[in-house]
Amino acid sequence: MDTPLKLTIYHANQCDPKRCTGLKLKRHGYARVVTKARFLPRRSVVLNPFSEKAFSPADRQRVEKFGLAALDCSWEHAEKVLLKRVKGTSRCLPILMAGNPVNFSKATKLSTVEALSGALYIAGFKQEAKDLLSIFVWGHTFLELNHELLEKYASAQDSTEIIEMQRSFTHGANMH
Image (cartoon, rainbow, N blue to C red; front, top):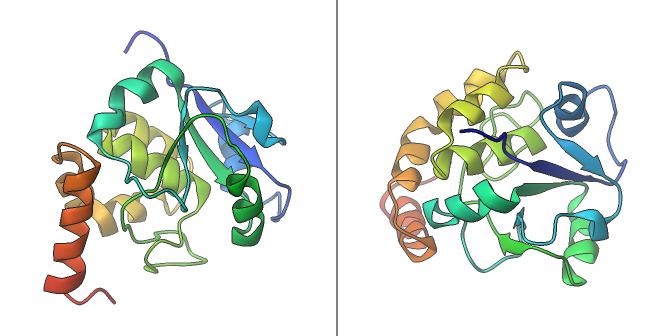
């Protein structure tokens, strides 16, 4: 890819700065951090847990052109921010397991770097996803735990297919 992907993180200063994956991505030059939701790039894909539309490979071109944004804040805060008008195209990530030590193997309890990496992987930016995770000692764990899911999601056509896959995972196999 000739231009690096534009990754933006809305940071609400609600976590321990030493353990914050979003701030570490900024320190390593992978992402830009903003402290107000209005500074999120206007046409980027915003990873929004309240979105009804799932992130899918169909979002690849928008991510490539306008970037990807994640929220680094508590759920209560995220709800307040996201229920207001957020610029960008909201998408929720499909079910993935956390590989970080704090929420290890808990479904959907992802750190900021895991959310961004999961989305990048699904959109076909697998090397970029690995690069982000490589700066964390436990980063490879996220990819190992989710390899099968990420590969399946990355093969989907669109949001509808991702939602169908999730239904079959949760009904067919018991998610623990």
